[in-house]
Length: 315
Image 1 (tube, helix red, strand yellow):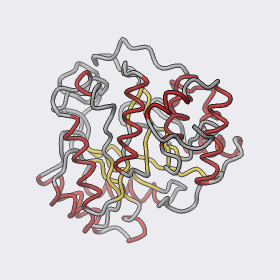
Image 2 (tube, helix red, strand yellow):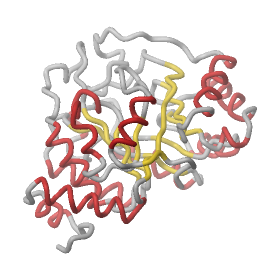
Image 3 (cartoon, helix red, strand yellow):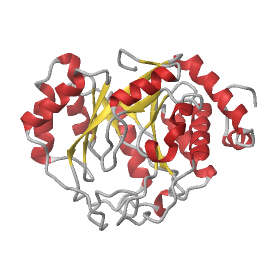
Image 4 (cartoon, one colour):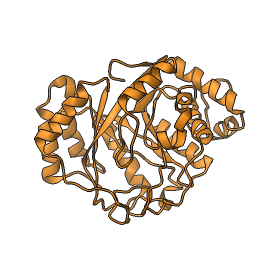
């Protein structure tokens, strides 16, 4: 194994034997070579919440769980357009539209397409859709409406996935991600850590993403929610989270590694260290069912860490 990226799962396991300082230093070097000091910012809009038929054990939006989270139908067209345009006027470069449920379909899907199609070209090209298990025809219609990126996490390894969800197969998640790429959409695809998975599971997920050719990888950390099956789980330590980030940087040296859910809880006062671990993208603002960091705070963190917010969309 050289000081660059790793070539195999066996090399990745070898990498994890390194002391923290060396592991993170190598990751920082890979991040610097890939994108320099820039940090790409995104934010999400929760456009339809709750009553999801999936039973993902970490999610408070599932109707299978007793989590006390608000639920609401799809935002009306005017409110959705207003919120998109407000984010478009900020330093946020990507705007994620996230709808609960196994798949967005019917009139809700048509309404989102109409809103997207009516936006200025420079705004709609910054949209990222997270609409679940869409078929090839609906993927193509997203692109035709001007939406350029699709978000669909694999969550964890194929081996561990049955431990966290019984209403969908991991291969269905992988196939949805592949359909987005086949349709010509850019793909944002990653996972969540702290579910009880092993390091081998984390390595397996990283190499699956590399095999798919994913260039935008969201890294989430479990924020245990009351009423969910994983409510009892202790959050990852900041040290372990930073090592997860460094692992993914070594397996995916050129990717945009984006820290998303669970960041304030898990990294806390050590958030500035994530750039040294290989991070070059952040989700700012609130997450779907938990609070995040304000844009102003994230911009200050980026500057204090010697980084700079990117002023154009990441490829």
